[in-house]
Image (cartoon, rainbow, N blue to C red):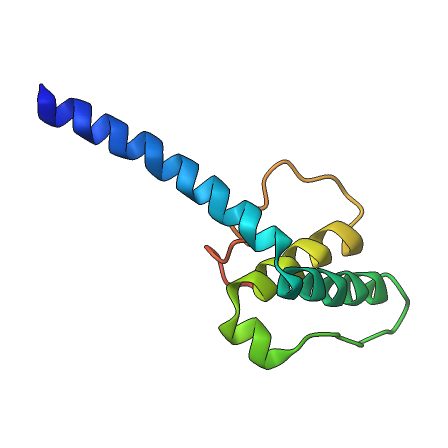
Length: 97
């Protein structure tokens, strides 16, 4: 019984930690830079015949905050259709970009 209680408590704390981590990530300057670059790319795609992509390849590959910001900006600024679920693309659970 003690084991189950400890597992439940650990699971609850893990949920809080990931929320705090996400909040800290969104406050990061690299998140904001990535968001701006992703938004610029998404907005460009709305224009006819535009192939312009704004993205720092090194930061996208190595900085989770930049990558998450870029994906969030791209999704929010580029595709104007509402989405209920991003399918894990923002946090990198799916690697489409």
